[in-house]
Image (cartoon, rainbow, N blue to C red; front, top):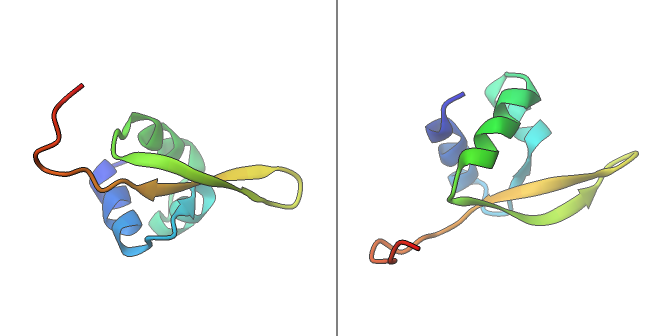
Length: 71
């Protein structure tokens, strides 16, 4: 799973997307999308959305300034 594709999709959807929505958009399983999201430092969980039986994380792309110092 390429993180660049996930970034491109999230950049177009400022309100964010769940892992399932991203997987459907990319036409892949949820597992590789979930693994990629965990490794991406510029993606965060904005809120939790109730589904039929549980809650799903809604992921958003963070806007990190170019001159931001590293931790």
